[in-house]
Length: 299
Image 1: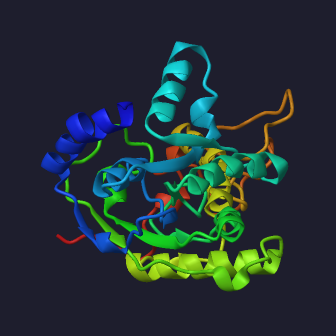
Image 2: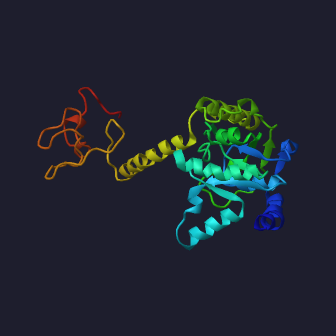
Image 3: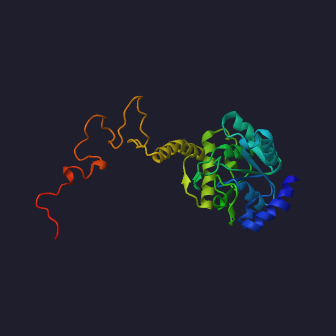
């Protein structure tokens, strides 16, 4: 009931008025159970796709949305449940398998299940390698897979942005993919990978995205690991500390070490600097500033 009210009375009309979403291939969605496998550019994908599709869509959402603490966490979890979203544990193994069982129940009841094979939002707008959870669902239930491409949602609400930009978005729905030829091979990891790659290829063809043969979660982890190092470099630059050959601030000096202001790095205190390295404050007081022989001034 809550899902219908939000979609029909509140969210749906506002989305159509502000973002004027367009859709192609709506007739490709079958009447019975099916999986809508979509690229994932933005948090708002889970809003624009259900609004575009007349039938209710149940999404597998990351379990963190359902595990929040305090009043805010409980309200967030309740909202996601009431908007037809199920918790998906992305840690792998038995936990992920248990989460997928909820998706199987939706399909066995004849519903539409929405899933993002990449497992997380794209960090840069490219399409990343799909995880095999979608293949396990397909092979276990025998339902068709409908590839979906969300267009422009990363411009409406990029990662980290709470208030969306007002601009038009689109949805392209491809023809259903049938994997019944793999019946009985749902536990074969090579078949799971083959099915997943075929789904990702169709999404790539519809969306026109560049494909990256790496998991988006791995790329995000690498980017997150670089942030502290960049922050240290910016802090060092702000206080005028030099950087060593590795691009990192130099190591701290030992207690009692003497630093001479204006002396070049690497020249020990108490020793004269190399020729040609006279400090700027001595300029004009020594022979270096004397006129060369034969030099004159214009009269």
